[in-house]
Length: 305
Image (cartoon, rainbow, N blue to C red; front, side, top):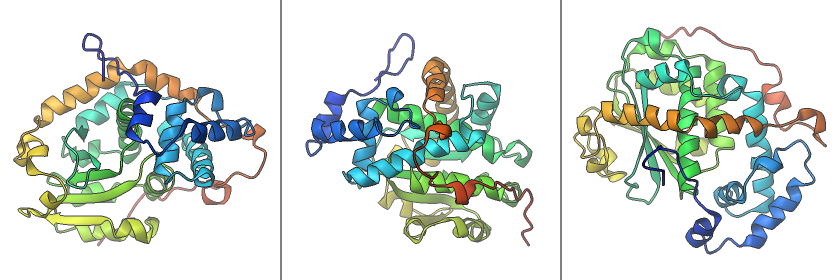
């Protein structure tokens, strides 16, 4: 829900979440809250009971897994400064969201999951920057979950009809690794599928680039749909897609404008997230990803034949 006058999003309430998830009790959340008190490096005072319930839900209601994911999630939000440091909706984010569309879809998939639709709005590869895309789209997804809470699963739909090989060659492999690691290991929802629609003939080159950073579980969730294929509709109804894709949802320009207006109206939420970071000097044990990302190199260029 949001205020129709201001566009400010109203967060889902804990009461609503308990109603959605009758198998989760206040005592489950209390246990996580008590554990947080023993972790001085984590931003416990800035985490709501809804935050804790969302984590507990996506971790199959395991206390131990929830603790690991909470720690890793906020550790990476602190460590991945390109995406999360000094978060605000600025001109760079606005430019990015005029270049790439990230539109959460209101219609669930046929399996009951929630989906977001991604596509290029500007086909010029020179305007495509994966770091800025990750930074901006994570703001969009965070605000969406702040409003809607728990999902049974999250489906990513990437429409490649404007993609060219030059977009792939511009990818920074360290940024690819960070984005995929965050998605797979500590997002506060389970990835239920990744669908590439209108896939070009170079999509296999893209898959070769991504596979070293993907778990087998996620590889098995990737689906390639060639141009003209109808196989995507086994996952989500065609009507749920934007009008340009033959659906009955809004058109690209309307969706773009609404996403930008939504972030502008909720700039306070985005800035407040900057408080939800880790203080490594207070960590009682070793950092869980010190070896994985402690020495940060960057492979700036790709050679794809």
